[in-house]
Image (tube, rainbow, N blue to C red; front, side, top):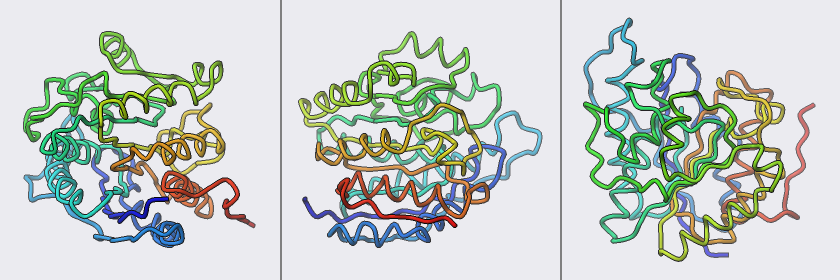
Length: 308
């Protein structure tokens, strides 16, 4: 196993949706033992602590788009931090809601472009997050990152996406809650998508293998964004957007083990953990275990846990 310097970046983003709690996520990951899990695998760990959004104008309480100015400020801060962190090692963003990926992927795309390499994104989520500020009915901007970093229009005020991720470089796995506007836009796109019926019928290995082969063939950098709601809520209850029928523990670990075997992962998001909704930290521990699998923990090394 190749030793890496894992750069932990706490991003207590809670502006992407109206239900509070994700700002506690970064510290919950730390409390669940993320640093120790990675250190035990032989990696060096640098924890940059929790970052803050840039200064911004206050948001109106009655605006359709919830906390727009604050989300833009987070995007600027995260993009800058992400681009700088690549020079230190493998950035791991500890969320925070999924709007943090507006900034983390933007920074990754800018860094990849500077290195002359394409960026690929593996999106592990129940949702596509392919909205724009104009198409979202809820006004929650955690549903817009993929729309943003692939270059869809309508993101006035956000940093310019100078190096959009090509749609064919995005692979979504775990979809099972897609509204009409997103579905229509997705049908017209070149994004690879695999909903849970596809996974039930054909398994995870085939689609993921095909995507990883594409990344390798193009000498790509790979950003992985793991949302808690990718997992079934019966095993990961600490998320405000639960959708039944998600990935099992073994399916999720298989993905992460395959990612490690590929050696292609260059950055990672762990998002949407709301510790207020957790049960004795079980979701935080599972996400830490999955991160460890993506960084080299083997099947035989699984920890035994008791929640009694």
